[in-house]
Amino acid sequence: MASSSSSSSTGAAVAAAPGTSSGGSIFPGPPPPTPSNHKPLPSTVAGGTEAALSAFLNRMLLSTPAPTLRSRTSSRLKTRTSAPPIVSLDSPDLGPLCAAADVGYFHLAGHDIPSQIPSSALAELSRVDASALRASNLCTLGFSEEDQEEADGGDDPAMVFDVDERGMGELPAAAEYARRMRDVGMKVMELLSRCPEVGFPEEPFAEGKRKARCLVWVSKAGTGESAAAPPPAGKTKAYPYVLGLHCQWEQEAAPSSLVMDDSGEWAAVGSSDAALLVTIGDIAQVWSNGKLKKVRGMARPTSAPSSDGHAGEPGRLSITVLITLPLDSVISPLVPPSDAGEEGFDEEEEKETDGADGDGDEWKFRSFLLEDYAWRVYHERLQFKDPLARYRI
Image 1 (cartoon, rainbow, N blue to C red):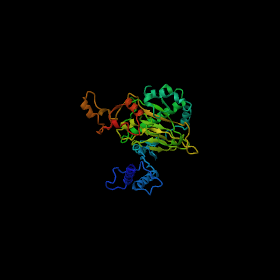
Image 2 (image 1 turned 90 degrees about the horizontal axis):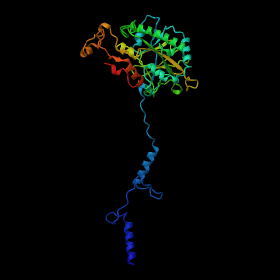
Image 3 (image 1 turned 90 degrees about the vertical axis):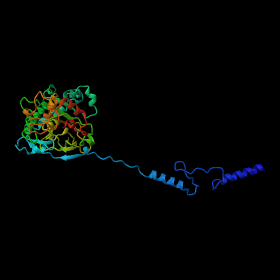
Image 4 (image 1 turned 60 degrees about the vertical axis):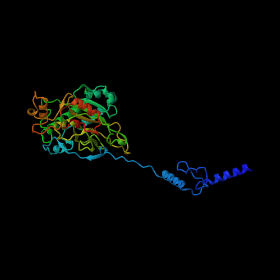
């Protein structure tokens, strides 16, 4: 009987513990429910503040969509439409050429190149196995075969030829086209030297001064939905040059060519009545002491969309002829010979005289070796940095 009574009193004490307010039980009360480990049973009364809050938070987390993060589109990836000036070799008016100096590219009329010549060159080049020419391309550009690994990851040119080397001996149509384009490029150089306020103070390729090098750069147009879009960052290969001449009129559906201007933005340039697209290169900008705007890289071909609007012309090639220099050339602003400095100056005197041209204007670029610069241009990402930035004064 005593034992029964003791059990009874203990049970009563335990039962009274949750409702005891001051010392009614020696046992602590149960912990409050938390949102992570408490779920009210169906028989529970509308439940306590904690349970209601837990259910509310769970509903909010399940019903609220995750926020979408939007990255701001870089202005460098936007493409604008451009109508460049039209310069004619038949016209003595240099006004359009002065306007082109502020753009970096222009259309050239009056070149006298028949339309069948670029068509024959493209047909001839389309039969060449470009996949077997990568080592040859690097050699023509002045790079060793060890540079192949470092050149990986970019959009390499399909083919590169030097007009004066044997590589074009088996491509008579392409060689004829390149030689004619080189002659046109030399005429443009003469025009730029006749406009010294925006061009060159002298004719760079006058007899005995410099030797021009002519390269044929063959590119493959993109296909698919991105056929008319700028190439992704880091996928654009380039090479330093004075002038680039690009044929557009073989493009039946008139797709635009893409050029990257001096600020690093892409522009879509359409064709114009059998005119050539001429781009001003980095060497020309240095020669002009910054008066000429340049194009970063060269014109990029695009493919016309097919009838369904999605795929471009498969495997279409495009030719750009580059007027450039031998790799052992030293690039600097052009100055009259009498003001270019004399031998025997010490380092400090040379620094003082090395920065002025014949008119007393300071040089805006330091001298540099083309070989080192060419390697850097070919491997760097043009979209993110002007390759001439390190040489500006």
